[in-house]
Amino acid sequence: MAQVHFEKIALIGIGLIGSSLARVIRREGLAGHIAIATRSAETLKRAEELGLGDSYTTDNAEAVKGADLVIVSVPVGSSGLVAQEIAGSLKDGAIVSDVGSTKASVIAQMQPEMPANVHFIPGHPIAGTEYSGPDAGFAELFTGRWCILTPLPETNEQAIAKLAAFWEACGSRVDRMDPQHHDLVLAIVSHLPHLIAYNIVGTANDLEQVTKSEVIKYSASGFRDFTRLASSDPTMWRDVCLNNKDAILEMLGRFSEDLASLQRLIRWGDGDALFDLFTRTRAVRRGIIEAGQEVDAPDFGRQSATLSKGGERP
Ligand code: NAP
Image (cartoon, rainbow, N blue to C red; front, side, top):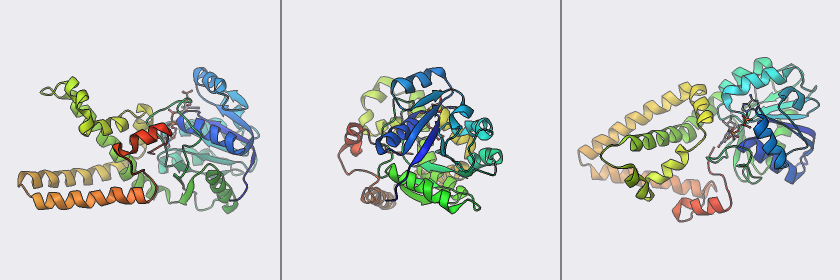
């Protein structure tokens, strides 16, 4: 693997993703100096207590001064504001990237603010957990997980290669994608599953014939697996829905149609069709395990994932 080192890396936002980056950057010696910026004094203080960086500020512009690499790890709805704040302080030739779960909207917000003398390369590590804040991060979060870069056509190839090498040094495998395609793919593999989880947990919570204590008591029969996704950060997921509206609506439309077909199969008692569908979907999980994106352990790998604090989702 190519050696990668930056004199100064600035991390804007020090929640789950930002603090995981801080930890892996330190562990792998990827930077001479880690500058940390976040919005609130409270989160900043916690980052300092955890010793995540070398300098700390609530002034995003201050943090990026002299940085060779800037990574913005804030909810996607705030990326435009951060871009405006840092634009005037970026070093000539700096690489500016982000980790946002949507790409076209982040590009629309950040790109117009970026000065011509920096390399803006959007990115998205497909790794995460349902937890947030600086305490939630861990250095192994990106190990074996994909990181998708969505560079704009005119972007300098050397800068892209350097950012790709950085993510590889963090343990990731790197892919490149068109931003619109990224948003469509993530709508089905991440955004729709979260919306289904939020919806089913909301439905169960509203039920009147089944008590809330029964829902909790018997949750191991399936419901519990949805509650993990449905406990994800509300700000992050509000912003994802508002910033990937078209792709999410497209996938929700398909999902609703397929759900209606499933409803019909049950009404007509079409056991063969139900069996065929469930057989087909079982093979999908096998493929995910074979691709190394899940462990084939009892309890859906949850216990081993918790033990290793291994991340499972984007
Ligand atoms: P998080 O744990 O909630 O942390 C968000 C951080 O952003 C906090 O430090 C927050 O600061 C900071 N922040 C918010 N607005 C800011 C601003 N205007 N200026 C500076 N800092 C600001 O969130 P996360 O899970 O790390 O997610 C960060 C990004 O990663 C999001 O875009 C998300 O879509 C993406 N992502 C998340 C996951 C996941 O599973 N969680 C996976 C892949 C990508 P304060 O606490 O000081 O307010």
